[in-house]
Image 1 (cartoon, rainbow, N blue to C red):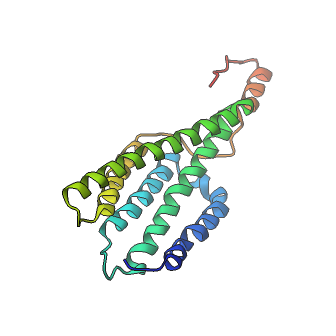
Image 2 (cartoon, one colour):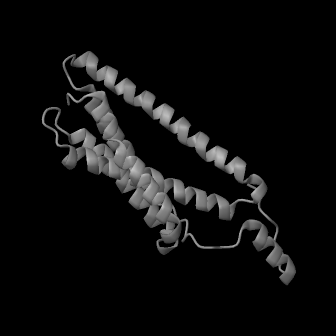
Length: 188
């Protein structure tokens, strides 16, 4: 779009500010909506973000109409997913395995990013071979839009329940042992 590197860097400010706001109020409001609804909101944020970048005109694209809402959508997508996954880990995985569960989730996240960035680069390079004067970045954003639609579909099928101040796995086992209805624990 012909902007300087500094202007483009400043465009990311809504992500930082939105991330701080979502992280601050997320803990107070997370219990109000079921996990599936939160994941769907997150998926919609991701979808809006990449769709706006796919549609932005190369010349004369308006920051307030395209970039600002895209940055807010990206913040909603990333931060809500992160909050929901952390609440799920802390309440459903035994304390001694929470580090392992967190590492597994982060590994899957970054592995997925790496693999799909490779696919996006492949699509862009193929587009540039066919059309040397084309806009390869659009192909990448349309690919990201397709991925966001698939992720949104997957999010709609996950049922996590509500994020509540529930007992941890250890507390539930101790309570069941005290009441005499101990059930075997499931290892993760």
